[in-house]
Length: 247
Image 1 (cartoon, helix red, strand yellow):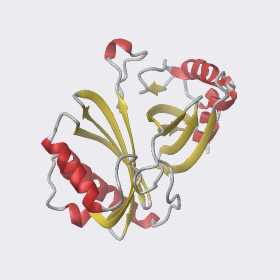
Image 2 (image 1 turned 180 degrees about the horizontal axis):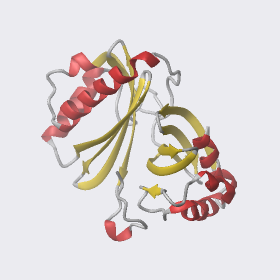
Image 3 (image 1 turned 60 degrees about the vertical axis):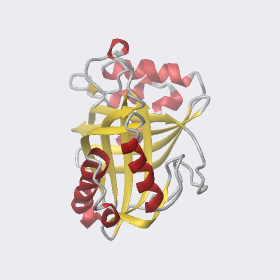
Image 4 (image 1 turned 120 degrees about the vertical axis):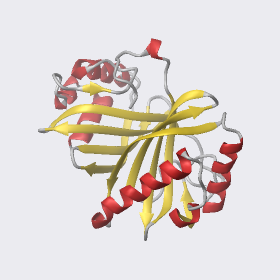
């Protein structure tokens, strides 16, 4: 897959990996990376000096989009979601969300463990809408009346601070309402999906700091049965190396 070829340049530092990018059209949404393949080539060269390792755990396709759930070893371990939009075999737009590895959580789940089997392709659009409904109504609007209809009771939880089960997830989210300065989802920007997996890209605040939330959900029979996430602080605009914004 082109996404994997491109990101393997992080390991090798090979500027040819960035040749997958269409420089004339490329829009970079990582605020700390310059535009175009030149920006990526410089990034790859810098990271390669740390003897990095890129491990692809889950890779998905959704039309012109490809997205991956990865482990990065840049002297320390990080968990990342990478999203690329392609046109005619070239990357033309990129988003990501990266968090230091934490855990395992109290249920002994790691941030990258769990199912990676893509199935139920015929349910892609249904699951996309279910995920959108959950994020918009529960996470953004803080309405919990339909929580049990959307989340399986035996939810498998990979958030490093939580335990398994819908009850624990709901209690955590409701606590966030009572202490809104801690985590506050404001806007759902995009829902990507392939079969039983959906990735929701949202914007909000954590401890009153501008934050990007990426939530990956796995569905079975119309309910969320497994959840992964990354949470990343958005750098102040004065520190951005491009003007495209995080989203």
